[in-house]
Image (cartoon, rainbow, N blue to C red; front, side, top):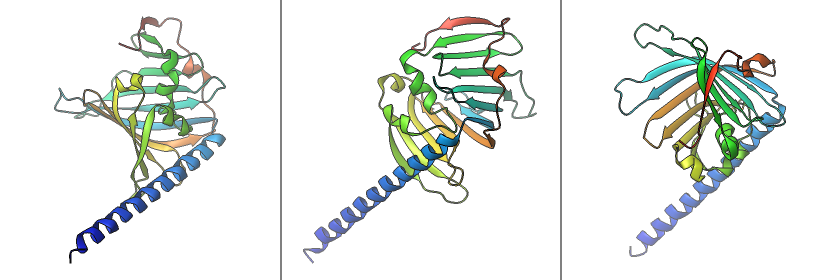
Length: 235
């Protein structure tokens, strides 16, 4: 009997090591599958819904919209066109547009109705910021700014889930945790969950993917009549 406890601990330790090995192998498989898919992707369009929960608010903020991504030699060009949704009436607000332009290192957002907005020079942080927003893109770049763990395997209609914790000092200012869900058939990101440093959460779910169908170049242009204010990314 005196050997029972050490033996049990050894069994548990062996099981834990085996589990870690399985996790590591599965994680590498997910990365390789998504990266292989990304090699074939030139552009992506999708619909999205977003649920944002602020600590200071009892009710979540709901929104929806369209996502368009176009790859360029200088980096991805990403357009999120969104509108708020009233939880009681489902009425939509006036649309907003957010551009993340990897080729020009800029982030621009403005109201399509009011014609006012902000422009941010992303500088060195542009890759860190844009990588996880690039639906249809490679996952490997995330390792530069995050540690990545396998948080869940496909089950009950869900895909692979990855948990990412920022290691970059720049990202640590804004993000506490990032979770990504990967479709196990198409190998694209279908869900982005972000918990910021204030413990507020943003949950984005993507559907109706169209890959390599072409996107409108005008989506990435800021109309001349839009008045933009320059702001700092570090604030």
